[in-house]
Image (cartoon, rainbow, N blue to C red; front, side, top):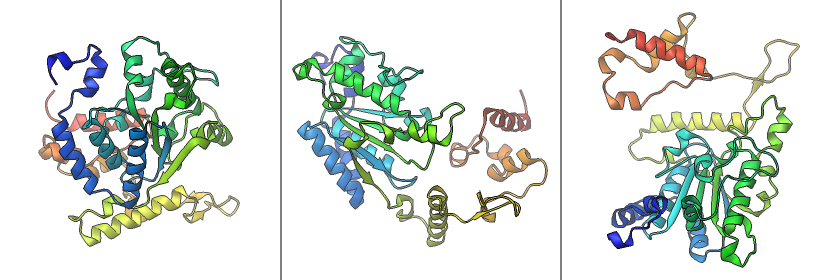
Length: 329
């Protein structure tokens, strides 16, 4: 891209500032690795972008079935053609997995306090508004985490921004091709002191726009298809993946803690448990990070393992324990 071709809008410049030749090679390599269902979704979404028909898609599937791989393929393919693709994810961590990923609150200026009539804080003739008008595809990862009012606020914003370009007629999501992704068995919108019914009713699947979405379901576990994984490891991963799905689908065997309770507890397999009667944090850290002091400067050692914690308080305790074991200031 020459200096004369560089757009004055810095946001658009950022979204176009890619080496198209590198992206084209990457896209071809990624497309060769798509399985049948991924290829079907890729072709339909790409066709919608090419025809500019503004179709809406939802890609459904559990962890490990290659959703991120599909996004990378779509993003590389379209950006290699000079098309702008916005990739957002409902959590900051998930957005880091997407090339050029952002959170939807950052990209669409979604208000923190939402209701049925909320609108995004977007204004015409701004750099962000101009960027959104020139977008060909929007990918929204981990969408089921968001309140349906957030999705509808984005719909209003895009419809308003694109209204002038469509003869004052408001079109659904501004006639942008939109792809949502996620797993409704995972985290749904957080409703303060909300009941199960409140949470379900806040889901994007309860939005009045949900009926317009075309659903693709991915089922093949991509982690099991890697050639460098031993059969024993594949069997172990397949068994774990099946157990996770059974829990999410309510099919895992339930037990009761005593004869007076309903069977609403799930027995965790013993091979997934760490045996520790005391000094829990120490045992957990030792199990996940053996020889920590000797290997704490090795990037791969740190990157290939992690400890998930339910609350920030637990995170602080674990971090404090680890830091206290490191010599020096």
